[in-house]
Length: 443
Image (cartoon, rainbow, N blue to C red):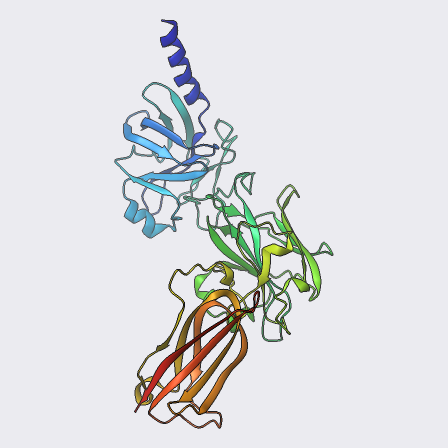
């Protein structure tokens, strides 16, 4: 009898101290968006239960073998397809399609429980609400009693399904981590400085009320919701000239253009990020000598983290971008691209038709080195040097180079076979990788 009571006590304790909560709900959506309920596990461990019950006073729905990872969201609704058509749901969120209890347009009481024990509950009244906007929980660790911990979403879309609530006082979740991942600070007149962040947590980060400043203490204060999705890159800049060089960034939309400006020094500076409590999130004191020593000029070349998980304050965490455009804003760093393909070079297309393919061909390359100085020479089949299009160009492990169909005198190459000699010298060891490939030019 004592042993049975002890087991029951353990089960009850696990439920009592669970950190699964009803975090947001949409009781009065605008068609075709369905009603939905968001659950959030704000605990440090995964939430696993044999049976989870979702109920209002008139109906109960059962989910068997329910689980939700730590600091993760799941959404329950009648039609997940319509929900995804109506809202942008992060891929990290779990979606359950089931026959939900109807959320009343007047007031209702919603609870989640095990077979016997209450896990969490929430009461709402549409007198407090707005049609087309969700109710959001302010603090997941505090019970909801009328409006003390429940507010209408102030997100521009009317809800934050699958991501951090707009009304959350903890605007940067304690379990959400992001880091400074790339810095472009020395730019020409046709480019823009920028700072790239990487969110390496499983939770959406909100920059609202955060600050990014330089050594002078001046910089950007985020006064509205600015979200960084889990495991995602995010760029902050203050000059739209960035789109001149990085044209694909505009389409990806993972950026924030600031009317406030940070003036990053070209020799050295400090970048500091703080949260709404003015507590430090991340910082870096960069120096221009962190660039690759083989580079004579570093203008329009960013400093990139070698790996996102490395600490920002250590110089060995950083190196010069090997991307052909000088940076990788909003995407994986050039040093962080792992390619297991065998080292090789390839001409595309080959044979090359002047009448069909135009004036340039592509040379795809993969070298054994993280960064190298590259030379490309084109010879005819008799061994005469015809063209020397690339001379000592600093590039990364792999990439694609556009090369013109012209010789050293700027004349178009005549249709015939050519030999391309490609060599790459490792900037760290001085080792040389060399390979030849046949290029056939046709009419």
